[in-house]
Image (cartoon, rainbow, N blue to C red):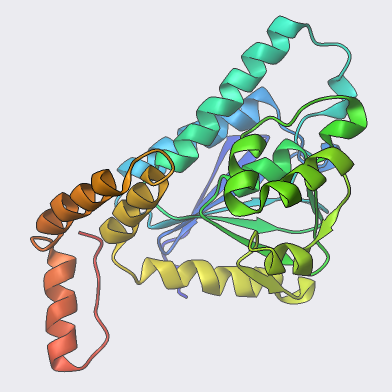
Length: 268
């Protein structure tokens, strides 16, 4: 990977944003609070995703945490101080972020290390792909403080696991190690901790070489299967494919196949 196109900005002190060679890195940056969510962090994520959607140079997004963990989710230090209205409003902002992550037509990779707890676990589940360091623990810690899951946990887990596995994680609040999470289908790849940065960079960069528009529409169609019937998905595929054959990336893919070479996709 070259470093000529690197650009770093500080969207907020709680979120660091770096773009390089088509990869937008979003780093949750409250290491002293184990990257627990803050209003500034959530707002920064929403603004960054909005930028990623409109910027054709950005082809893939990586979400990771600074310090020794991915995210602790809600800030336990502030629990007991908020009113029901405060909680309702805060979770409303989080819900907007989760929905935006699902709708942005770029692949989002969660790169998890240390642990992802509570809504931090659910934030990773809202991504399209999850890679984890070998030391990672995933834990839905809500039951430990007498709460239900938020951030989409009740939605994502039963779609990824059996209802029995999902309820066990929710009810027990016991940690799930990275290898078990991978065997359950929650994690795509597990890397040694000392190779994590290199492996994640290689993995993310590989998606910049693929047809961005096609990947985005695959994401849209796959997510639509949550609520649409088979006939609706079939018709959506039909209409989308009729449009996709007009793209330059399709034409390049066909030409590369005929010329027996790797395609040089541009994302359009």
